Image (cartoon, rainbow, N blue to C red; front, side, top):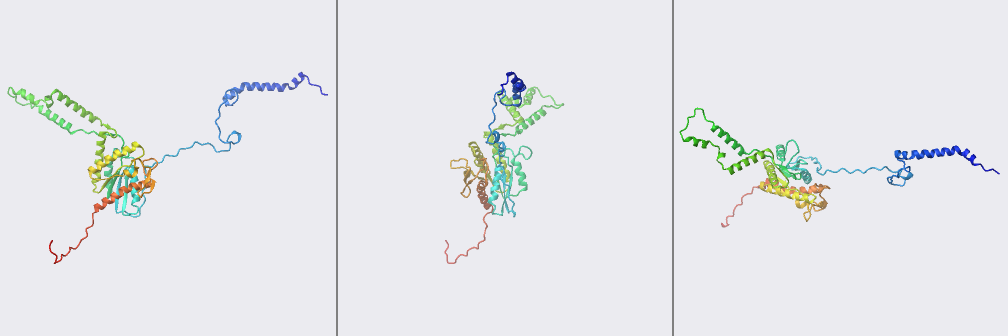
Length: 394
């Protein structure tokens, strides 16, 4: 029978192991908190840290063999302001329609090209500036406005009809250009004349007694004869005129003065286009998405209609074709053949192909009417009828 080991013997045999275990425990107790802070080990000293949840049920508590997580990228915003490029034609058209304006005119020209696809004698010339308007043709450089740009275009093109469509980018302030008034120049000339009259020649003879005071009264400037109130008003008007020449006024969209200045720009452009001697058509703007935008388009269309009426050109009203029965913006609706199609792009401003074709339908019929009236009916010679001898007069 084996005798039990004494306590001292057990301690002496296992002493090195116990000593090693105690040393390891002390080392872990000292180094543990520091290593937990430095290496972010959980469970040593500090409070437990929250781990991000992992998707999937793969090995080792996560989706080890799953696809890597990537941040979803947003799709680039599509630009609908540019219509497709013109298609090449095999034949040279006999008559051309010149389309001027901004991005709306670009889509109108695209629709007219589709409308004239089966008419080889009719062509379309697109001359547009995508972001432009009557207020500003381009931010810097020449030409600065559409009137100057139109002069350059008409110098090289020979259209049979001219179509204008713009205004989308004219909802901005107008700075009035100040020029010196002719009244100021006349006043300066008068002052120079009075200065010369005051200068007496050296050999001038003295006037008789009593005439000196009258001469002095006659030589006084006209301003001295004004009453104090009139003189104050005159000084105030001169001060205002000088300050007006120093800098132009800035007028916000829809202001009364803004309307006057914008109407002059419409009149100026129409006058340049009419000088070509061909029919001119001004196309109104359609409704765009949003109550404020639709209201702005209506406001501008009223100015275009009024300007076209005063100048004696044709105004093409397209409004009803792109709104519903309540007068609201229409994203999808009947095309020019009556089929329900997507008429406007996703931005709520520009057109799809069916929308551009419907837009062109309004213009096409007016161009056809004007060109037909311009050519006039063909006179066919008719032989005079020989009256019968037995027919009584009357």
